[in-house]
Image 1 (cartoon, rainbow, N blue to C red):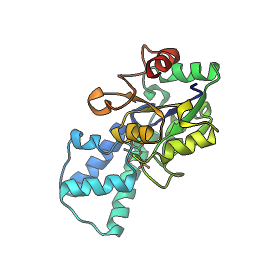
Image 2 (cartoon, rainbow, N blue to C red):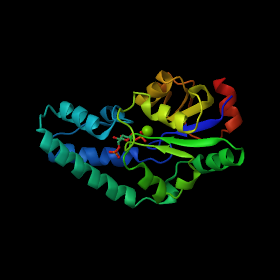
Image 3 (tube, rainbow, N blue to C red):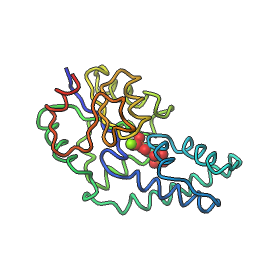
Image 4 (tube, rainbow, N blue to C red):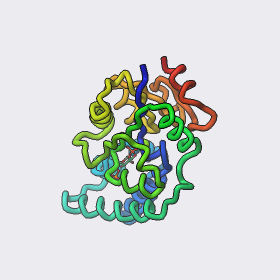
Length: 216
Ligand code: B16
Ligand code: MG
């Protein structure tokens, strides 16, 4: 029986994926190369330093650890600048009605994000109080596709993976949910998320009941 819903943040609740892309691209450009939206797809759900290493690989660049940390911090400053300008209008379509309905019907709500800026973003769009538990990049030691983030969330909620549905927009996140034994609902393009139990283009025009019915 489903008792909880665990949301990824970037690309599921808000479109911060575009801000990550812009900030990483700005860094790459300043270092003298560029990368595409297709390559960017591989960064979704991946931690800051793992993303850094992938991007430098695409540019054929090697940096010292010290320089990597410096550029990662610069990228984060650019990203945080964008997050700080966010408003509740940036909550993706259908998310708020779903959160309200979940709360009304007594389901637990969790956040399972790789981002160290997750709480900041939730606060900016004013939905922090909906979450019974928040597991983010400040609490995990292993990045998606490792299931740690969702396992920690289920444990905090005192539930088993099979009692939880995970919403994810990233390949790495869907993989993390499936490896951990969770139900995975992909939000976005079935081309990238085909392994999930169900893929929705958005939260619009769906209900909790319809989601539960189609995964079981
Ligand atoms: P930060 P999610 C992930 O968040 C993003 O998808 C990914 O692009 C980013 O690199 C990662 O968080 C770390 O973010 O640099 O803010 O700690 O999709 O798991 O909510
Ligand atoms: Mg995401």
